[in-house]
Length: 252
Image (cartoon, rainbow, N blue to C red; front, side):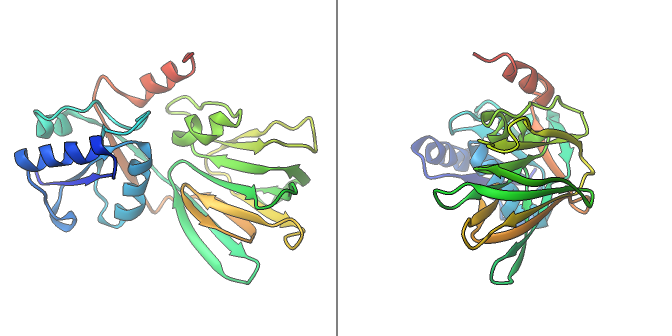
């Protein structure tokens, strides 16, 4: 098996990369069978963003912090661990962003797409679901559209629900909503098309973010599931997403 290793700037990650080079060597991405990430969740997301055109499965070993999407770090038997890993296949979100200057951009998101105010003033957003306006005006700091895989990340920190593994859902979670006060978000079928329009973009500027890719002065964003792309995250048999999500809901 040919492996392409990815690592980050922290000392644990660099040390792990050096150890792997002595045992397995580095294979160029265009010849590899698998990408192994020696870091945390942030680098897993970056690996999907930067290498999806090669359509390679990604196997992470935690050399970062939380490492929700990674496996336990171990130098030995890596090839066999990859062969025994259970693939989690999923379609990422696709964000189509329009900016105030007329530019349009497209970006993928493994975890979430969110809109966030740029100044001290609250954002004012119109929320459209499958071409039907559901909220004429949402006054808030921002709004998160999260995939099932990303529901334990920013979405959960903002008070959104964790989606059980296998549920074909995504979340819509407000960040510090002010009006309407009674609205606390929504669970949506994963095939839903979410369209968000920025009201008063001149006086209340908003940025749109897909995972870590940011677009300032956004005026609208359309979010859909991109079925043309299929990503594969490899997890050890005793480290499945189902187990992780269950444990996360009872974490203290």
